[in-house]
Image (cartoon, rainbow over all chains, first blue to last red; front, side, top):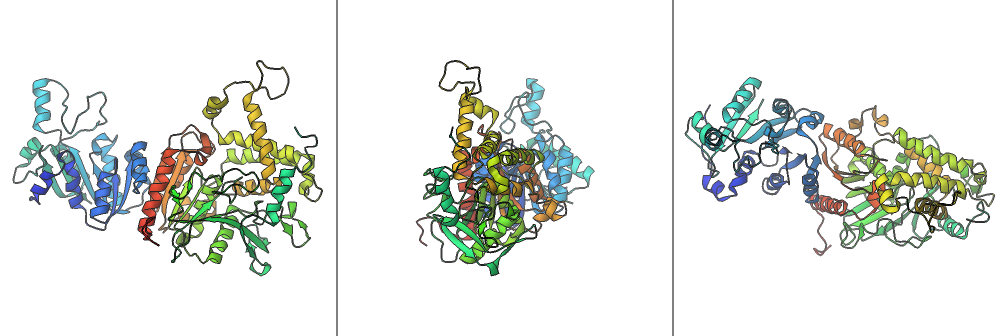
Length: 214
Length: 400
């Protein structure tokens, strides 16, 4: 497979590089579509989507504080758990289901992905790439569990229990028969890595965004 | 305590004026426009008493219907005509408040079966010329909602911007959204459930038996005999009141503190503050509420089961709904626990409805919906503002 051609990288660079994946995700969503954002946090992405892209957005968030913050801002969000609550939705209820930096914190990522591909036509997944050179270097030369900008917690209090690399995720998609429509790796500055072999993207990509479908 | 507890109190007589001549707007539906009830009877004629706050806009799109709870009434945001106390939701409804009367037109009707001007068991039975008493037909929450729909018809309002309520009020909200899908733009059911649980039916039965065990209940004809089952109704209220609080709330408020004494008396006076508090709650309740209304309305709640009305599947009740929902529950509410709200959320998810769900951390128990809970206020304000924007209603100060 090939990685994507660049789309306005300067605009992305000028944004908050920490959550530049959100802008990239927003870019993948067709305007006016029905969207479910799983692990929507304080609703940042949902707000971008409904304000700028006119989507009919819903959210699920595990933390009650996040949910209450979202609803008080007028967003449609419920308190729920990606591992258990996706089963309640009917088939193809949404155009896009978004799992932004959440899959690595689920108990059963494969089952969550199966559910998402069932309830939504398209699935957008972003995650921190555990194959990034800084992660590898910290483990190899520091001998300690890696802590980076995208993975700031210590091993004992991190919610991230199922970390993977870009290659790992592609293997899972392949195994599940999920079609990869787009795949974009971003470096530490939020720049899309293009015209680079997969192994290099897996080394230099700090995070990755995938657009999947069945 | 009263020398003759079975006699009518002055406050009670004052309250009874509200049955025939309420300090509220009233719509009288003549016998030709009776209300067919779920139980098969026809309530005809019937009246609905209501309060309003704010102004209905030109296209009648800014109405928020407020449904009151079991022992509430239409006086949500004005001083109560009997007790003189502030309305039960004065903190929520008013200019600049979450249910902002500068922006919305708020309608709060008394439920049928009630005792503040809408037709209920203490109203005159046209067939006999005497109060209905036990001859009043058993009603359901859906009957109450149908009566409210008739009121909206009368006011010329097709669709409400929102219908909101807590406890039995929340149950009415769920019934509204199931029965009149097109008439409900948004719905805010608070601290409620889509069916009344076995435990809740059990508590209600204790209350009803307490009323009926009082000899002054007179087989339900106490009004004709100039009596009142004050003791029975007070006991019913005391038992119910415990279910509205939480263990922690009671502990924080009273602990094991003694009432006006330094040690226990080895008798059955109200030694403990919590006993004294409950007795006061019971006695003040009977001044403002009718015993038969209590029987009929608790019965209506017991019969409530939306799924049963839709083939046993709750989701069926909401198939195809376009209503925006915002469910709210409280962590310490053991009368309507969060799980009950979550079941509704799951049913709404199953039909891909637009739903928000907020559980608020509170140690105040079921009654939290009536109290100053900042997160409750923020949630309702945010949700309503968003609903109004979607409905194209201008904000306050933006002109009519």
